[in-house]
Image (cartoon, rainbow, N blue to C red):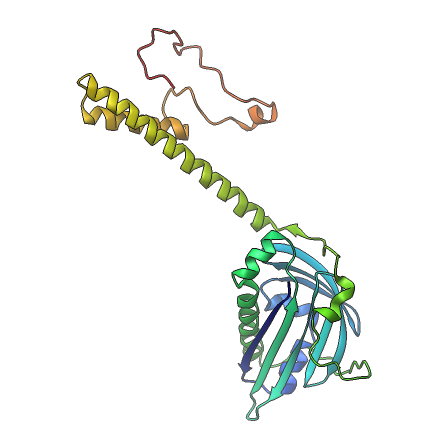
Length: 272
């Protein structure tokens, strides 16, 4: 499955300034939110590290065509499969239209879900907006490379077929710290929801028993409050509590009752 993204931004600087800044690839992390690093390996070779939909990806790309003040086209040679071009159009009056066209192939469940949600498309638009803010606020380009790269025949706008050499390469995929944290948070939320449902069901049963023996609804509500405390491991003197780090490392699966807690069958307290 291939996804194509095309975004344009109008920057209020001369075309040469906008183009010159774009040639400073190693400075991309300053205005591209998902890009962690870019390393220039040669005039036409780049090594990228970025986060795509929360997944850390690496790839190498070859510049297929570079024409000063007009366009830069590239395709991945290994790693995450992607290709595209950025073009610069002089509108006169110190204004330039910058258009980014990107084709990529999402890999893995997380990237495919992010692709459906339009995460990469939104990221591309935001990156162009940050580029606009960066170059307009600086008032000058931080550097420039005015050389040309030619492949002989006109390249046009490269697509993922031009990056075929990178297909089948995992791109050193791995979930980012944020993705892992999101997964842990989701699991925690699910566990809390399950505990709340279980506590509510248990409380309803005990409230019904209270009514059959003349118990009041207030006592039932109080009991449900205790159930909630037990579910969260926060009630004072509870049998259930959170395991400490030492206990987890020791492989503990439960925590014994304290010496001062009565465990006898005749205990009139609520059975947990």
